[in-house]
Image (cartoon, rainbow, N blue to C red; front, side, top):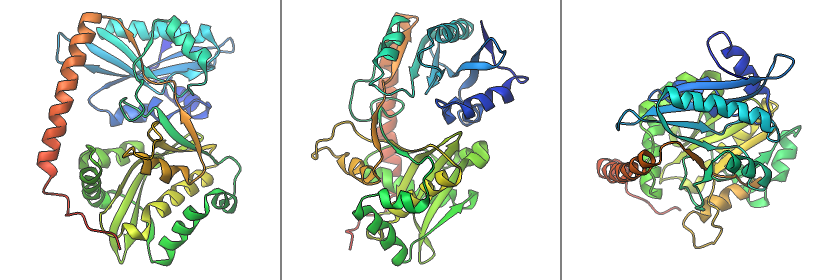
Length: 361
């Protein structure tokens, strides 16, 4: 029998996902606070001992059409992936929430490798269908990531595991005078400006300043803003999240100037050291393209992350359980049009904010 998490059981729930191997920050109520436009709800199942043995958190968003809602479980469920009975009970809870919020779809993108064909078959047996077959960044969450095993490693052992070129670049940044600091709200504006510069250079839409500021507030000790400085001026930055036994590299930005000083390598090393300090099992570099052809514009990102000798991981992907097909088709079409218009608007609004691209020395 499932139960819905409430104020009385929230602390127990948070402790469960923080301690579970499949735990993820996106399943935490802290992430629900960050996504203020959504309603956060969670379902749990208990074992015979009365303790939680499985859970699934949802971000629920009401669409501006007939009051229909999307239920999205980012990197859920958190449970024994072979336990069909627990998953079945979690889905009972999910359907109950869908009924309460007039859900037209239940969307999930589990933290489960694609090679786990048994779990994929389990999802399909419950009516889910794979939606994300692309090899770049077509889904809400990346389907392909690099993950670094940091369990029990010392900093020296970790550094020695990187490629010779990456070790050289880390040391070069230090030698050239790049300094990395953990910063707070005082540097969010600078980070956002560098992020806009990066987005214009690499052709992606980024978040606004309020989003990054709120992330630090809502995640508290679980989030860190790392900034790289050269001669006292910020030249690059990253945002990382620690939760349970993992640290995730969430956002990264670098100025068009001073990229030859390799600040991004030093920033990654500092975040990896945070994972070591916290006794983590995994450092997650997050998304890369699954298209490994060197002609792919995203190949450079793959090559950069690969040099830290993590494991190239493909997840099972994004899956939808469609509850109202006509509504599903109509909203998907409207969403794609809205996203396209937003991209064009973003580029128009920010084209004058990014400095002219300079050649690296």
